[in-house]
Each structure stands twice: as C-alpha cells, then as structure tokens.
Image 1 (cartoon, helix red, strand yellow):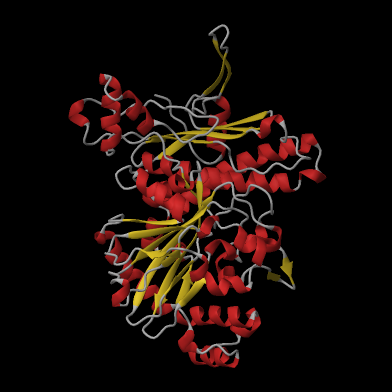
Image 2: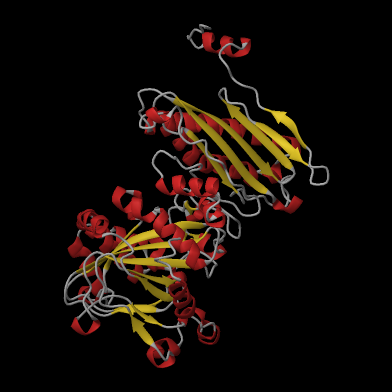
Length: 528
C-alpha cells in the first residue's frame, strides 16, 4: 500500500480504535463523476430500496414484493409501526455489478491494497458496496456493526466509507459516521450480553471515548473494522455516501447464513439483499470462490508493462544500478505466499526508435493458495493441502496484449468454478474418475475463456497462447494452447542441479495433427 497515505500511525490508530481516516485518499476528479452516476442509479432504484426496508421490518420477502409503489411501501411500514420519516437512510447494494464507475473504485488496487494492509492479510475479496442516501428529515442511524449483518465467520472485515460531498462538522449538522473507540475488540459485549441485551442501550456509557472524523472534504475516506460499533445523526441536509466492504479471502461462510428455510436464506435481514443471490451456492466452512465475491487483491496482472508503468521502469533501473535493491525487489515482487517468485521483465520489443509502438504482450499469474476446496475424501487432500495455479500468456499480433490480459483475468475464476464443481461430487467418484474429470474441467476452461473473449473482446486481430500449471495436493496438471514452449523443472538444493522433467508441445500449424485439425475446420495451412 502507499506508505505516504497509510502511515504507521494511521495503521496503529485503526488497530487500536477500530477506525481511522485517510485524508485525500481519492481524487475529487474521481469522486464527482462517481457521485453523478450513483445519484442517477439511486433515483432509478428508490422503490427497491423501500422494498428492502419493508422486508427488514416485516421479516418477509413476500410482504415486500407485494408493494408495487413507494406509497404502498410507506403504508406497509406504517402498518408495521415503522414511520417512513424514521428511516435512517435508503440503501442500494452491490452497485459495482451494474455501474462501471463504482466497479472501478470497488475493484481498484488503491482500496484493495489498503484493505489487505489494514487487515494484515495476503489477499482480500470484495464483499459488497452500497450507496447510502440520507435525506433531509431521515432519522438517526442506530448503533450497529457491519460484520453482524454479513454471512462470514471472521474478524477480518473492513469498510471504506466515501462521502460524495463535503461533510460539515458535527456541531454544524454533519452526518458522518460516529464510532465507539475499541468496540471492535470488546469481546465481553456479545459474550455476556448476547446480541440484544440491555447493555446495547447504554453504549455511550460503556465506552470511554466516542469519536468521529468530521468535517470531511471530498476525497477523505473513513475506514472501520467489521465489528466496530458506529452510528450517525439524523439528517438536516441531503447526504450521499458510498461504502465498499472487503473481507479476508480465506473467510468462510457460516452454516446458518447459507441454510435455506422454506426457500429463504437465514441470516440478518438488514444485509440479506446483498448476499442472498450467492450464499446458497457455496459450501459453508470451506474456502470458496464465487464471481459475486471476487478476489481483488493481489492483482493478477504480471509482469507489468514497461511501456506504461513508470514505477516498474524505475524499479528495474534501480535493480540494474544496484540502488535500493530491497525497495526495487519489493515493487517487483509478485503475488504469492508460500510459493512466490520474482519475475524478470522483458521490457519493450525492438530498438529504442520503435519504443512508442511496441509493447510487452506477456502476462502471467501466480495464485497460492488457489481457491479450490478439496474435501477430505478428495484424492487432492493431504500433502499439505497444496493448491497452486501458475499461468503464462503470450499475446500475438495487434491487440494480442488485450487478449493475454483478458485470459490472465478470466481463466483463474472460470477454472476454479469448474474444479470446485468436480470436488463437490468427488465422494461419488473413484480416484481415476476425479482425475479424468479434472482434466476435462481444465480443457473446458480454456474453451470457455476463448468463447467468452470472442463476446467480451472485439479486437480486429490478435490472440494469445496460454500455459497453465495446476497443483492440487500431490497431483500436477499442465494445459497448453498455442505455440509457446513452457517447461517444468526440478531443482536440487544439495547438488545445485536443475533438470527439465516436462516440456509442453508447441501447437504449430505445420505439425501434421494440427494441420489436419485446421483443414477439417475449413482452414488452410501455407508454410513459408
């Protein structure tokens, strides 16, 4: 993370108090256009926001669905002894899925890296984002903690709260968040008082310090831990805020959150709308992967493109000159944990006169641990539960770099979904069948990426080769597409000898088998 923004003092404040503020964390040039898009989206979804409030108040999705207008929602709330003017805000979940401007922020390196740093974890997932629309006359936001409303069993959860306009001081009616310092580590509160004891009515007496970070300028961002108790005052002026929540990538879903009763998901109704579309599709108490909860840190794009990444250029220059070796290696160090590597970068093609037109089309990814859940009956369990993915992608022709990057981004998720599907059925399969279906899943993943790329990308030409190595327990699977040559080698620490034990086959058009395949598909091969 940016050490100038996430100072040691700031990190200590977050660890001690459960919250902090990062001044000027985001540029106003980013926030103001984002505000425009989010206000438009919020206005188009007001009825849905009211329905969510009806469902929370009634405990019934059926009651909420019957409300076809905002007026019917307000009447339903009155019937449930919830006056509409007492609502603390209107909330819109998972905006990142439909608003590109929000997606760029929620999945950005700037926030995700900061989340991993403050949580002190190697990898984080995007759990949810939300718009909070506090209208003039809306009531106060009661004391609450976000993690209590989430489906995870974890203490590693963090929210970035981004005001979309200046927030005045508390004395002047500011409706920024107010925090109970240290409440994120108050284990005695739920242990002795349950979830709804009388003690929750006297929190301001329980905690010696209640604090806030108002006033806030556009670009300032407050950050709080999942279990930090916070609230906000009632609104005099209209206020929009955008909140993004991340969770440790190793966090598991609780059984009760994923259990359905009469077709409905059990869990806290307040945030159920955020996770009800995916929580029933993952196995509780298992490492899981789902496209609705994407891994956003570490980023998967390696090596960096020296044509546009000034930081990478400077780091490589430092390595060559011997200056600041430790810092340069840190900047070039790839994502990884137990299995990690430093990748050297080939840089730009051609001579210096062609630097403006030649770019690096190579991409690579290393994920360890890779998100494949292997149950105890799986042949891949044991052996230290090794789960590793290494992928290398080489773009070809014009726009080949776009295809290589697309493959780098998409293949890990698609492959993990297919591998996890095989693992979910492994108790009904023999070891040989598991291995065979795993190989089919790998091949199908390559085809799926190719098919998806033809829809999502529209380059006039270009493509990419791909080599993927997947280690699951004691088994290693290798898949290759295209004419790039990759190899697996062993290294002996005792002898210092490196030995190549496997080499992929280059799928060149001149090979008899490849020529036959091309011609049967209606193509032709002409060798120079």
